[in-house]
Image 1 (cartoon, rainbow, N blue to C red):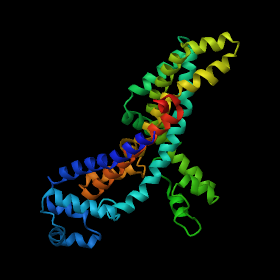
Image 2 (tube, rainbow, N blue to C red):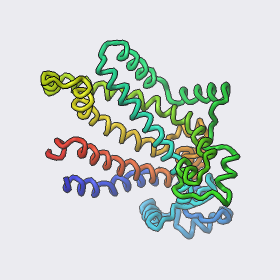
Image 3 (cartoon, rainbow, N blue to C red):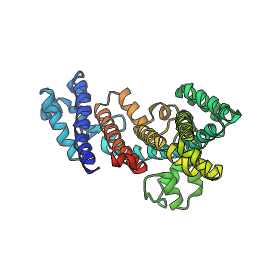
Length: 341
């Protein structure tokens, strides 16, 4: 286990370097004036780009430039983002908590309902419960996420006025930037409770419902299918027949024996989906104008903000490689057979 962990830890920096170098190499197709934003630390420097180009050698070969960029990254300097009107590191720190908050709420819904529906579908195979679960999962999996998001936005915001897009309302913005509101974690749902601001909590939750529901339906469909297949496989094994022959109740057989083994693939799937959500739900955050890291990445790409694009890509690459490692470790913790192998 320790050798596996050390081997993966040694490979992580290589993967991140490979991804970032590829993206950095692609940016060389742009003019030095555009790439100068990587090294601009003050908006006033945008008027003296030629000086910035000479200072940082933006007409040097790509390997020298990449080396300088890595050196700056090691010191926490990711450049200035014109699209966010702030340093890239500050922009990532500002927008990432909102995406983590959205991803966490989504995954709670996905895991709870996905596992429950999948297990119920397998237990009641070929009955109406199974047919309903399969219909919902196939429909949710087939519906494009951007279509679903627009439909929910049109119905629940445009027609019924139940929920709103964005991260929070103007009234909440006034409260959280007031002198009495303290930021403890950066997650507004948590900070609003710690400040005793129930109105802020309700408003933030109201704005979370539609994007979380949009993400949940697609991920939920896949979770149901995986849980159903895994549960059906476990219910057909010898140890389940033995447990029933020993006189155990159906509840004990399903949830204490078969369920524990069936949920192992779900753990891996849930971890991978959570990492994907942390990487920035670009389409959903754009549709609902949600102030997360995915929306920041879209704005950076639209405005040819090279510093913002590279900073966003670096963050996503780190999240994916570290998250995949944690998924593997969680998998071994859930299944002792993996540790023995």
